[in-house]
Amino acid sequence: MKLTVDLIGWAGAGALLLAYAMVSFKKLRPDSRPYQLLNALGSCCLIVNTMYYRAYPSAFVNVIWILIAILASINVRRNPAGAGS
Image 1: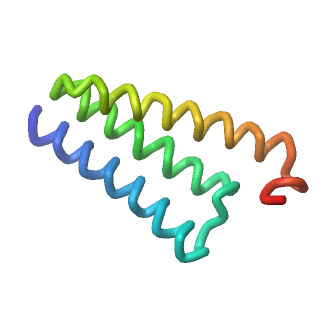
Image 2: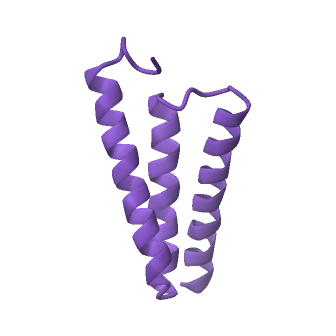
Image 3: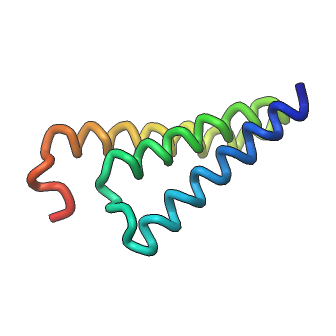
């Protein structure tokens, strides 16, 4: 079980870093659905890991991170023409 949780955590960290790198190097737009999906997926994975290790402050940050990604995705969906402006 520990190995599985660790692998999930590393996958989550990788997803968040990939999202950040893709936006930083202008491969993804910060208001794009793929970027928000990578953020939400990465945070979900990190929540699994941090809850397993009882690192509640980190779990809390990732819950907020997911909420931000969801709200941003909803905003993009509602206003695709105005996104990024």
